Amino acid sequence: MTTETPKPIQETAVEVCTNTDPLHLIDVDHVCIYVGNAKQAAFYYAYAFGFQVAQYDDLTTGNRDEASYLLTQGNIRILITTGLTKDHPAQRHTNLYGDGVKDIAFTVFDAEKAYNRAIENGAESAYEPYTVGGEEGKVTRAGIKTYGEVVHTFVSRTGTYTLPELKQGGLIFPGFEKMEHPLNQFNKDNPCGLKFLDHCVGNVEFNGMNKTVDWYEKVLEFSMFKHFDDADISTEFSSLMSKVMSSGSGLIKFPINEPAEGKRKSQIQEYLDWHNDTPGVQHLAFRTDDALASIAELRKRGVNFLQLPDAYYELLWDRIGDIEEEKQLVQDLGILVDRDDQGYLLQLFTRPVQDRPTLFFEIICRRGSQSFGKGNFKALFEALELEQDRRGNL
Picture 1 (tube, rainbow, N blue to C red):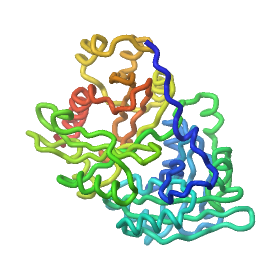
Picture 2 (cartoon, one colour; picture 1 turned 180 degrees about the horizontal axis):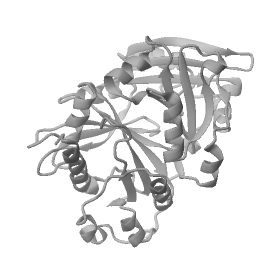
Picture 3 (tube, one colour; picture 1 turned 30 degrees about the vertical axis):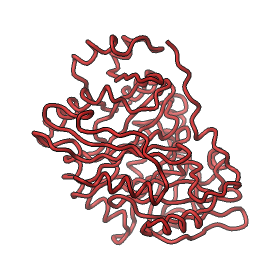
């Protein structure tokens, strides 16, 4: 059975400034990850996940405060940033939480109007609107605080900094310069096939989920897309609750997780324990059109994925039925599969990408299904619990 994959919203969004809704999100502008050493982190993500190290801004470009590298792949833009002074907020962040996602930024038609609307809706300001640039073009940014210490930045662009220009290799911000990283050509010749950010998962404290859901509904005017309780996501030992929020355009989904009562510690509580008891981003999910090719290439590059219980595939195919992909290859690569009334999806989760178990990535391929692999929750949790046990955190 073949189900046509829906065209990503990111590829169909109208990018002319005609929309009157201040909180209409055009795209995920970029994700900023604070790290201890941006140069080394950029090399890791370039080699392990196939990103282009496209631009940089550091001491050599005149930036005395921070060093940043722009990583790109498909429509994914990740800004890897480290502080150059002891008072830079990235230094505090990495000291308290380790490397992690600080900012999920949205392209909007007017950043100041989006910011003002969010403040009217009850948001707390992270920083007020400011504009940089000149005759060639300008970028306006303004930020609001969400759960934990995560920020949502609104970004609006003109001239040479517009989103279409950025997608074609234009500079992300004034002060950045393009670069030819040693791995860029290798990654072009050996693509990993990651297309765009499918969803972003946040972990919050016990009883923090509904508060965060209310925040997205009131402040950013999102709506609930899915709801999973501890009956859906549980094993003999641990469980969690999750609600998925979506913007009006459906641009990106934000699952919000909180720990639930269980015999032992859930993966959400483990995250909180190692994230200084502070909510934050647990993982980013990257969409691919070819799960087999992407995961095979990532495994070849040394990316470590969760290992599924052997019994997972014994009952899988009776539950899933026919798929486009060769089933034996799916099993050989350790990929999870799930089906709903809209189609099916393939997904796989990396192990934590740093020593603290606080950040990992998901590779997801959708063949019609717009859900999150509900049928895989039990198998996934069992695999996660094996990893927690190995770390002494179960």
